[in-house]
Image (cartoon, rainbow, N blue to C red; front, side, top):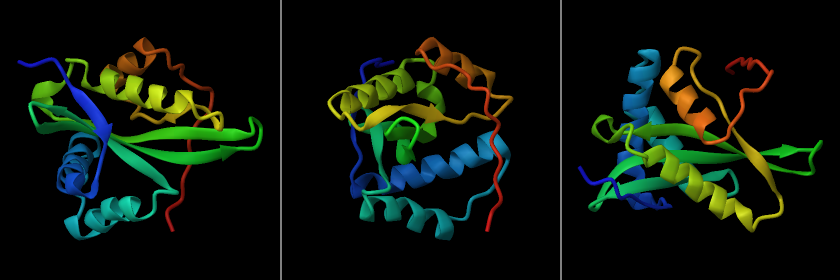
Length: 152
């Protein structure tokens, strides 16, 4: 299988792939069914509001095989932005081949010349040890924070 991947900033033409990836990821990681009528406007909404973040995609031979989303969090402690890595998905037949690594190194390179970016963060399912090992191998450290949420 081809192990060369091209990574680029996603465009609205990539929305269908990203929608399908989000639906698949929710089912795989949380056994949750996402409704297309909810996820589609959410994906398209990020393209319409670039001040919230952006997507990148990885391609192999013209096929989108992975994606992730970056959103921004202001840190007053650091006077800078954390780029939150979210909605990471690689199609199963391309996993463990460096797709995520290539995407991660690409966003790090994108941020290198942006002095307002102070770091990268992500959250991961507690049971997803494969992903945790991948993130650690790329230099990310587990924090001492726990995450809480309340949906509106």
